[in-house]
Length: 124
Image (cartoon, rainbow, N blue to C red; front, side):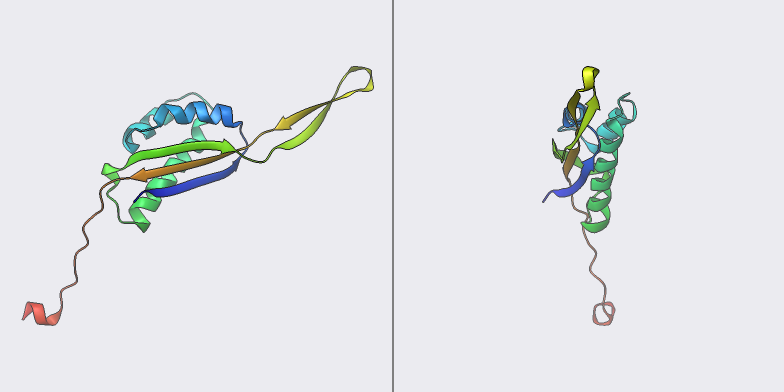
């Protein structure tokens, strides 16, 4: 079962974030973190944070081994757009949009084995 983490409403164009997400799609989490830490793009930071959040969810909430995690799916979708106007020559106003993104990361790996608690009957 894959574990999910989402970052919604990231104030960056989905096209820019998607190009960074494409670098780490299908890789192990350890490789992805190294790649993103050395990527000189502003979009690398929110993708890195989302992957770290997915790793935290998997290790703490779902009992996965951190060193076996792999990125199963990473998608970047359009978020809400804020529409604005820029003043132009001769009294005109030109429209533009401030775009945002939703980043969704699914990681999967090997589940840690849980130890059964020993009872007084088993030790006796």
